[in-house]
Length: 230
Image (tube, rainbow, N blue to C red; front, side, top):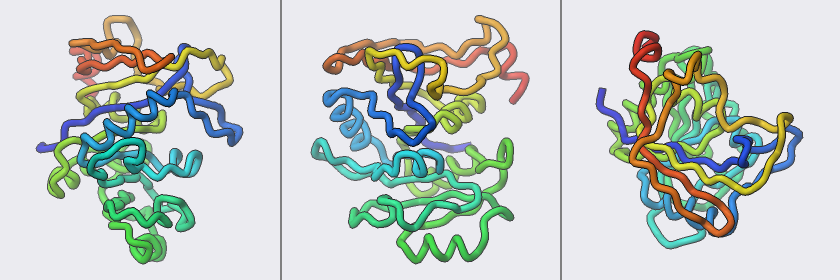
């Protein structure tokens, strides 16, 4: 299957947390980290998030902290519950908004509402747990000319790309703070039973972004248990 090159990009605390679930928006990256994240966006054809990230953070997903082209903005939204009042739909930015829902789960009314607000809606097959099929989404994006896709979250989406072995690179901005066990983990259950089944990074690069530590590398999937599950 032809698909874009997929890079996971996210910020987390030292103990692997991305924030809390009580409505407080977590901004873990430093000013340098935020600027770098916008520069990375400008280097990709599209940036993708899940609906929960939209509901929690209401991001614009645009390039603002540096000069560069604007990526297409992609939302995974099984039942098309993306509020029409979000900044994403209300912004005057010209970059295309692509919303992916699930065939049979998204209502025609919801689809018309999003399209009336300028979004392009695609309904694809159901994937794991009733969510949007990632492989189908990537195939459509490739047909639309997306060759480099940046996935920014949230935790469920990042985990899904790793569990299905559909991410190629990872970039992690690590803030020098500890949030503790009540905070949301950056990744959910990956199905790892042993260290031998861990997802690893090769060709590792580490740099400083102000007070943050930035780690990037190529994703290497285990060949034992994971390949048998696919």
